[in-house]
Image (tube, rainbow, N blue to C red; front, top):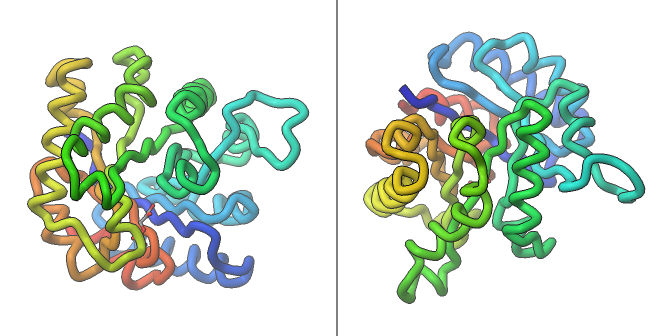
Length: 253
Ligand code: 13P
């Protein structure tokens, strides 16, 4: 059985005080209300990871993710944060290849493949993001485009390492726009991607891989989206900044 996962990507939001309040509210609500078989992950800004890990660490079905990491192991890379540093403070997951990083920081599939490797070498779970733009969605070939992001970013992995990766499909046109993919559109892409994984790693591995949906997911639409057979949870942006709404999403399976 593949894991059900709800991850909150806080992006570049919240002061330290606000982050502490949000994290502690989420931790309490998750402990009290969310089924133990749902893994709940928060991805705060890197600056707050050390502090917030102390809240999430003791909760067995919670994890804490960095939003990015360096593709280099260590050394003279001013401003960067390495995977081993993240590991050393108890980070469990790292979001890799979010469309905002691809778009604003020009991250290439080649660099992202290196980041996936270094995250795995350090015993953490990469949450590997993929998704097409609006122009691509309106044209042809967007299924093949999203598949190519997986091919170039993670298909170099052994089946064993691949089994440790979580995938997040986030259509760019649905991120922060209030325009959600319909549950049918999400299911269609997720099923297609699972088929693509099966073509490389076999059906058993593909069936064990969690594929999350992201893009204007909220407490109102989560249940329908998560009810789709190939949708295993969500990567939540705006709605993860409110503890009540985020927890409600985690309860939507
Ligand atoms: P929104 O939920 O705000 O659309 O953001 C989705 C996202 O980018 C999560 O990584």
